[in-house]
Amino acid sequence: MEEIRNKVAESGLITLSLEDYYPRAARLNLDIAPWLYEGMILREKDFRAHLKEHDWSQYQDAYVAVFCSADAIVPQWAYMLLGSYLQGLAKKVVFGDQAILETVVMDEVLSKLDLEQFKDKRVILKGCGSLPIPPQAYLKFSMELQKVVKSLMFGEACSTVPIYKKK
Image (tube, rainbow, N blue to C red; front, side, top):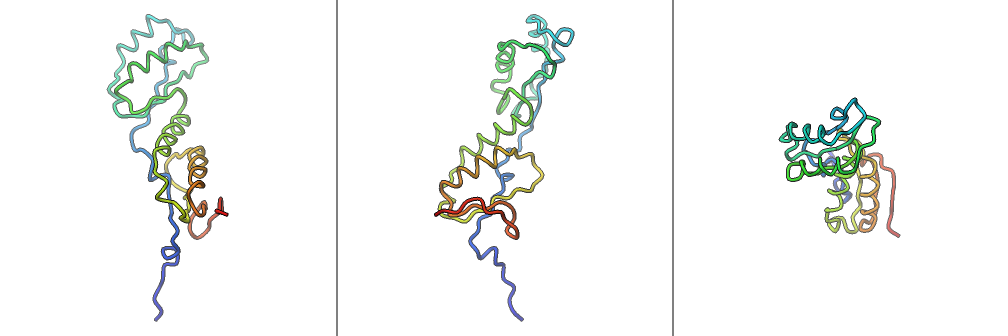
């Protein structure tokens, strides 16, 4: 009987998943809309009172998206003040929604990777998964990988889409 061989393992292909680099810390939203007077006006005295009463401990070691869901004009200092409360608690604070938060977090993680380990390698970047990896992460990572890899493909070893091949 002939031995079963794993041709994918023998091919020298490296399969990467961005999920392996995804930080597992909590993602939280901080919407200031409930703290607005009549749902549309930010009054400094009331806003500062809400900040003092708020339970900030929930943001410890979390990634936080700060925004206002109401159609209101919010002065810049209000977000700066929120930042001063979150400083030292949250891992990362961004102005924007959950999608912006994910983009910023993944961008930061990927920019710290040492890509030399993939120098002149044949790499497959997996696309399917259960975590909310933003499209920007795939774009940035693929562009950075192209600087070092021999070839880059997207998908699974059984069905890849060629992205880049070194000339």
